[in-house]
Image (cartoon, rainbow, N blue to C red):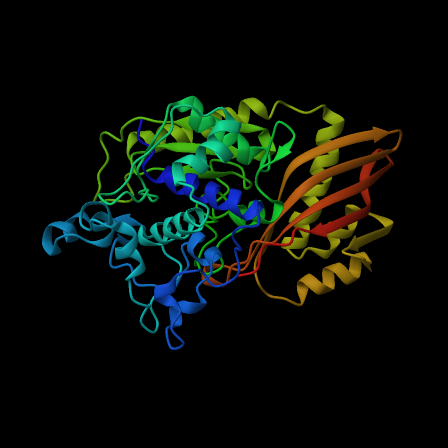
Amino acid sequence: MPGWSITKTVQATLVGALEHDRRLNLFEPAPVAEWSGASDPRRLITLADLLRMSAPIACGPGLVKGWFDHAAWRRDGYVESLYVFSGPDDVYAYSISRPPLAQGETRGAYTNCQPMVVGHIVQQELRKTGETVTGYATAKVFGPLGIRSMVLEPDRVGNFESASYSYAIARDWARLGLLYAQDGVWNGQRMLSPEFMALVRAPAPWWTTPAYGGQVWLSKATCDPWPCDAYWMQGIEGQRVMIVPSHDLVVVRLGHGIGDDPNDPNKPHPAIRAMAAAGKALVAAINRPAPPENRAVETVVQDVFAALGAQDRAAFHALLAPDFKLDEDGRLMTADQIFDLVAADPVKRRWTITQAQVQHAGDLATVTYRNTGSFGEGAERRVPEWTETAILRRSDDKWRLLSLHSTRIRQIAP
């Protein structure tokens, strides 16, 4: 079955393999000769910018309010989103020739020419050693993962159409998803570096909402219907490879998007609605009820952050032991210091706890979890994340937070 834009993540995986082999650098200026002129603003574009759909190049009109404007296609002819597939003989040359963005134009936006530039960079690197894209992909990615059905389709001059044209059976798409679910490790061997995996999962800094990462879509913008840590590969007809690390879950959906209304983004086609319903059902099934004592411990941690977000000092203190301390990245703080720090900043804050694991030892309990924040709204919104370990003590038949050790997950810089 066609993957359509799932192909973008196939391309990103090749970048990750080359980065792991120390053949590509994500944050140095992209090796595109046509952009290297001293006065060309494109000379500063990095491979990370391109992976994050954040390179300041004008790919042409394609998406309107996050959806394809079919009426504009009929009125104005081909736009970039179609033309890049059906117009140029050499899709890499066409994409590289796109001019810089004009002043004030949106930099973080979904386009098809940026992955094509990435394809050019990968092809150019492999040709230095006489390798081909399909040969390298088979040796470094498809072979180790056991992917046997993958077909990479070229344009008319032989370039891999790296934005949309790959084909595979569902089990092979699942194998690719499992590589990401396992943090880039397969059978005990690291295939994608921790730095690359961090870039993939972190929100693209130039997007106005945390909806896109590194050639994948993110659940952080809504945390619904999939958990906050979920991310996915996405095709235009509802093709999905959902990756949910907190639930050790990968879900693949192929097929055709019959019945969609392409002119109304508020009416997603049945495939999308079915995936949303499946997400709720699967997460509910995996989230089997925890033992009552575990639920009580988790609830205290969640309530602590809810009280902090609501700036309710009394409720916050009621959930803490009198000798509570926070250790965040080596800095010790008391309850009042934490509360005053949050209260001094007027932005709206929300925290979401996932991947919680609870252990008991008498009147002490330890819970480890991933904490995803949402600070501010709109273009100013930030989504910091931490791994945390909380110790709770039971007294008067109530659990109270005794200590919290918090380590910020460092997101890759823009």
